[in-house]
Each structure stands twice: as C-alpha cells, then as structure tokens.
Image (cartoon, rainbow, N blue to C red; front, side, top):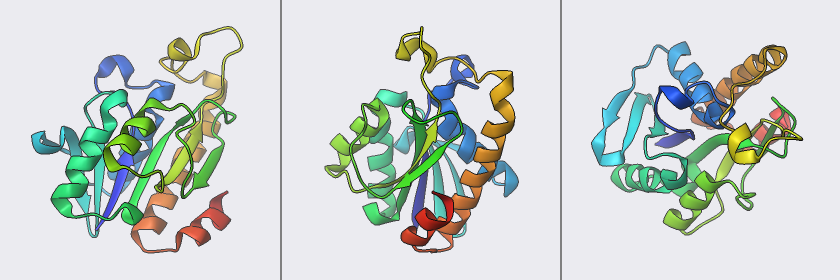
Amino acid sequence: MKLIVGLGNPGKKYFNTRHNIGFLCVDHFVHKHKLIYKKQRKFKAEVAQTQGAIILKPQTYMNLSGVSVKAAMDYYHIDPNDVLIIYDDLDLPTAKLRIRYQGSSGGHKGMMSIFEQLHTKDLKRVKFGIDRHPELDAKDYVLQPFYKVELDDVLKSIQTVSNIIEDFINNTTFENIMTLYN
C-alpha cells in the first residue's frame, strides 16, 4: 500500500493559496480518477482510496501534518519507503518541480512535523516551487493565491505531479521517476 500526502491548510480561507499546492495536486489526481474524499477522524484527514494507494490531505493545519501522516501509516502499516509527500517550496521558481528521496525540511514546518513524528528524513517528496516575493514576509506570501500570469505554468505542473503520483502508485522506481521528471 502506498501513501500519497498533499500538504496544505484546511478551510476556504486557504483553498487556492500557494501554501496549499500539495492539496491542489492531490485534488487534481483524485478528480482525474473520479475518487471521493471521506473525512477520517482517526487520521484527522480527508482520505481517498484507489487500487494500492491512500491519498491523504491532513486537516491538522500545516504545522501538525505529521500527526495525520503517522496515524495513517500506523493504521495501514505503511513503510516510509511507500510514502510520497507533495508540498510547496519557496526556494524554487513558481511551478518548478524538484523530486527527492531524502533531505532536510528546508524550513518547511509541515515537513518538520512529519520528520518529528516519523523519526526519519528519508521520505520521498515532490517539492512544488512557489517562489519568494521580494517585498513580502514569507508567512504572508505563502497564504496568497498564484498570480494570473503564473496559472498556465502552475496548472501544467499540477498535471505533471498527477503523472508522478500515477507512476509512484504503479511501482515505477523512484530513481526512474526522478530521472523522468527532474
């Protein structure tokens, strides 16, 4: 069983913000495959299920994402090697993707929470670039929507992430995924 995690914040206030790109990516995958999310209190998350995979949207707010991820992994007995996390990255240009199988949190509080809960940094991830704003504080900038001029590139990258998810679920080696999409 694979676990695909999109990071974001719950609620309409955050729906189309840069910080919610992980949610937007898994939502695209779920919609494309005609899956349905169900609220799962035991995971503090919305969950969709497909053949061989659980799609998880933690509803704990970003800084506590690890609580939800750990609960789902424990319940389904999912090995950390079978987890893929999708989240925003301020240090990448908008819509640029970077796929990694380990590394630091890069200051991302959702990833910090996951590392704390799982006691490992060896987790596969797709970092989705949201860029930095030269005049806005990062905590304010990540809670803004993408600019209209960015939307075509963002939508193309969301589609690419959906393809990455499919490949991951279909057991394409992660090295091949990194070669194909990085």
